[in-house]
Amino acid sequence: VQLQASGGGLVQTGGSLRLSCAVSGRTLNSYTMGWFRQAPGKEREFVGFSHWRNKNTYYADSVKGRFTISRDNAKNTVYLQMNGLKPEDTAVYYCAQSSSHLITSATYRYRRPEEYDYWGQGTLVTVSS
Image 1 (cartoon, one colour):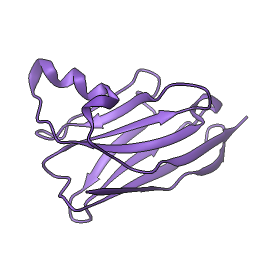
Image 2 (tube, one colour; image 1 turned 30 degrees about the vertical axis):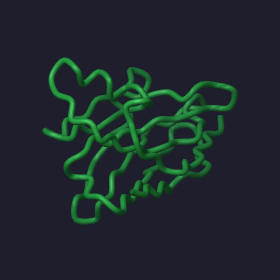
Image 3 (cartoon, helix red, strand yellow; image 1 turned 60 degrees about the vertical axis):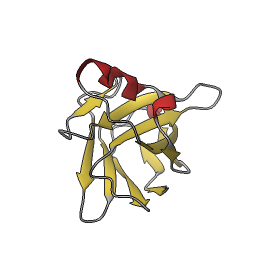
């Protein structure tokens, strides 16, 4: 399984970017897809995920209302649409796929990087002030 992230770049405060994550080797339709980010000198942090079963999306409070995860099963690609970008959104963004099939009360675990088996290489997003 390989994940290829793309779409990062330099954008001004308030701008938008759409990140893509193309999955090969396994369909994304039956798996939870997550997005994480890591700013310089900081730990990797949760951004959001799309649940494997119902495709519902969940987000970190810091991006809720600004970021949106979507899937295109025909292209085997997941997207992260980022609007209203702020300088504090500057980071390397990673997509990831989990092989676990958690439901109900266990789904909080998808907010943890260790729940994911496969990772993309990361794409840098820089938001200028």
